[in-house]
Amino acid sequence: MKPKTAPEREGFRQAMAWLHTWSGLILGWLLFAIFFTGTLSFFKTEFNLWMRPELHALPPASADVAERAQQALHRKAPDVTQWFMRLPDERQPGVTILWRGKEGGRFKTLLMNPQTGEAIETRDTMGGEFFYRFHFELRTAQKGRWTLEGRWVVGVATMLMFIALLTGVVTHRRIFKDFFTFRPTKGGQRAWLDAHNVSGVLVLPFYLMITFSGLMIFHSMYMPSGIAAAYPGPKGTDSQTYFAEMQGDTASGRSARRAPGEAVPALPLTDLAPVLASAHRTWGDARIGGLSARRDGDRAVIEVTRHDGDRLQYGPARMRFDAVTGETLALIDPDSPALRTYRVLYGLHLARFAGPGMRWGLFGFGVLGSLMIATGMVLWSVKRRQQAQRKGAAAPPLRRGERLVASLNVALLGGLPLATGVFLASNRLLPLDLEGRADAELSCFFGAWGLALLIGIVRPDRWGWSVLLGLAGAVFAALPVLNAFTTHTHLGVTLPTGEWVWAGMDLSFLATGALLGWMAWRLRPARGAKVVATRGRSAETGSATPPSTPSTPAAGA
Image (cartoon, rainbow, N blue to C red; front, side, top):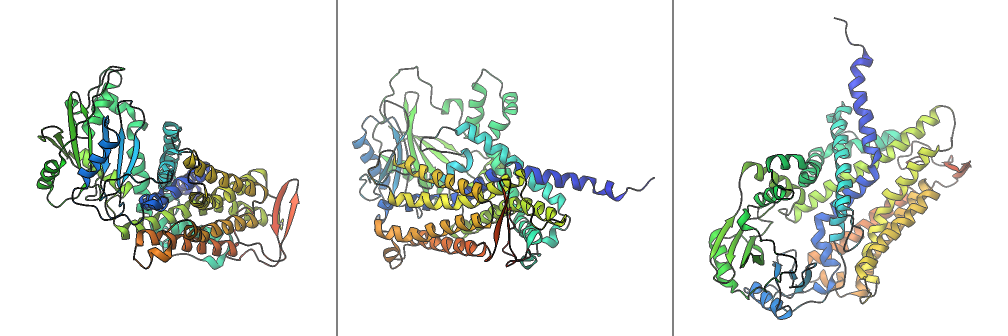
């Protein structure tokens, strides 16, 4: 048998390297935005609080907090036909109620004092929900439009990332050696490749888990054929039955559809004490996360839900009661192997179970994932730049494709931190009575990102990187100052009283500002460097900083 030649042996790995490069490059900038906002979403609740300073210094919840909140809701909306109540916990001090009346339409939100049940008026903002919704559906407005389309785009990008991860494992033959190898003093392509490898290998299991679980969450949208085959029936019936079983419901346990125009009777005021006592007897010391009420045909029902931070799998157990008699109707906690597997994957992705230490750990993994994507995008430019220099030209002009990638790297990778900082600053600077205030905050976010795109087009070099990162660092460092001038939740109040949820946000902003400022300083243009322009294409040269300097991301970086 004829032995395989070296090119034949390398053929599969080279094919995987090609697939790894292009699956990462095609939607790499979008993947960075998805991973970046997903990382911030680990602290979605903390962002929600910081962006609603009116919730600061709320008293501890009283024992009858659910009863008080229900009574206050019925005083405000006697004709309420459906409501969801989230009870206070260590991360969220207020009571949150979503409700709607006989007129139907969108749910309205009501925030309440956990002791008095009185409504709390807060500024109009999406808060941390924006990062969460943008992460998986590219939400661009408070009410949102690109829900389904955005989820499809994110799904395609996630699949490409999953492919890039798997092919990256094949491509990097020395994957375990790369775990311990980082040579920033080498500079140029070697330093960027090491940074990409280290950030990619260090928490590779996390990347695989978070990517695969993200795909599984929306499996019904990406792979509807299996559901249609297993649940045959008239159009729409099959999927409804499937989702009912996933929730632990049956056909009789779901709200009956009403004829168009048929009025929905208002919900009665329920005595919640015996309902909650029954739930505590069933679940022991488990926390109650929330309650909900609705019409199931002609019967009004109350559902009590366990706190979603009490266990790994997402989809907490529920108990259903008759809202009039208090009779227990059902204990809903499906435990089939398939559902448990799905719920564990869902829970791992959302990390609702994680305490403060684990959330910070997951946040760090997310930062490394963002760096892995960013260094991969920069590496593409650096590699081609150095290949051109090895052909003899000291500073060849950027070709059109290289300039496009370099511009987008500067604008989208360097501009997203700036846009995030501007979004947070706008929460403190915009007038509180501004109509459409939440959408105005989002306009500030996308406006800052648009400015970054302009800078990236004009200067796709170290100057562009330094300016954007420097601006982002200045904005983040200014956030605690803005907070002190516009609210009473500043560090002078929260640090002495040990309110670490609030103080931690300001301290994190200061640390982020310092890190971004340091990066901007490291990437500043070298003294004595000059810009050479050729037919609209630019390249930075200069003898003051040699190509091997570790902070030099090359002209296209």
